[in-house]
Length: 329
Image 1 (cartoon, rainbow, N blue to C red):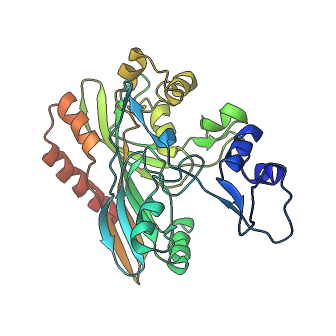
Image 2: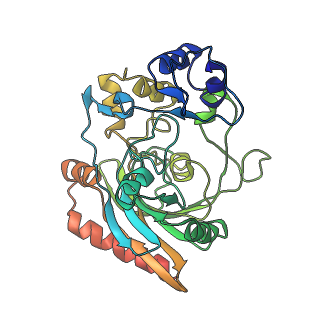
């Protein structure tokens, strides 16, 4: 039994598997009696696994557990499609240890059926996210992303470093690639456009406000590479605040992951998560072009109010205007 379970739960140690079997969290469907690690399985038997929600999905900042937003805001909904504003730290769908605080899982509770992810946002990235209520629509909408028929816009806040050329509109076209295995799989590197390493990537940037060494802007990714906006922004001297990996480097990222971050670490990154928010999508749907535009999240608005002399309402109006201009091109 333990050997069989280990094949499917490779992130668990053998001892963890044994404990789960002894506690009844892993068992054989309709098999009477006590199940042990050494119990033999027979052809066509069904193994069931119970996963209990615990503290492993909790998020911390300055040693205190964060209050996370439980209910995503719904922007649009019909019989086939859900368009939501995903809160920060919510996964798009179950992956790894994140299996409860997920957008698909949340809406499955209400609809009592499978909710399908069409595309995904990184766990810390908030904003506009499309979900499908049936596999047919999920496939159709996914094809729109794969065929580059979707326009996307993200809002970001970054620090300004000496690498920034003080250009308010620019294009980042560095190739992006994952360099290796182990811990290196976490990091995406940027390469020159003529390099044999990495894959082609393209992001348009528009800076809309600068103050006290910070820049607020919009990013329009033309490709969909992993960590694309974060890496392109960093490469051009605009590392995102809250970005433990590309603002602080792997050692800092690991300290946060292990809940061992120092006071200096917290002061450097400034936010519990990277300041990247999916503001809007333009996508063909039901034989017409649909625009889905969200609003700025509360944590980002709170940071702006504390750090900058900027009116939030004016900012949101300007952001919306620039998104609509981009969608019309």
